[in-house]
Length: 137
Image (tube, rainbow, N blue to C red; front, side, top):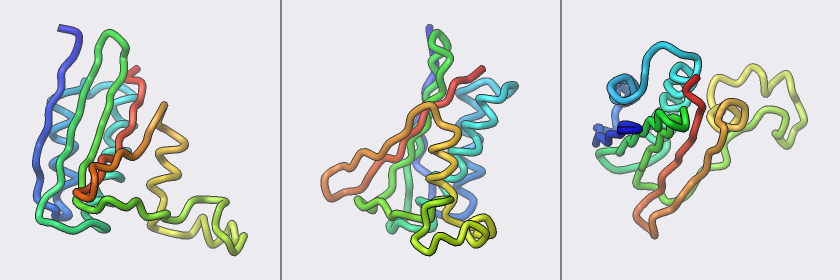
């Protein structure tokens, strides 16, 4: 077997990020920088889904391809639109100091900085998957 994968339906609740990390821990090894980065990204994407979508639940999918050394995480929520969010160095005011002091809106920045690849796939008008990949080692 070259990998493991799992999917979970989680209540759209602040506890969902911790529950998603448990799913990741069962699928991917817990002793590497890549796993830590996957946990960070999964937490951020789940938190955004909980905060900005509607509906009672979200779905979390995790895949660990051992032969390629890649962890893929994906989160589905019932909002088919992706909010722009704030991104460091890209706000229209040009106030980089204000950007650095923001406590929210950093999810897209983290995906850009850490993920080997990431994207958004809409599912008609039903919702969207936000996915990312990181190297496990």
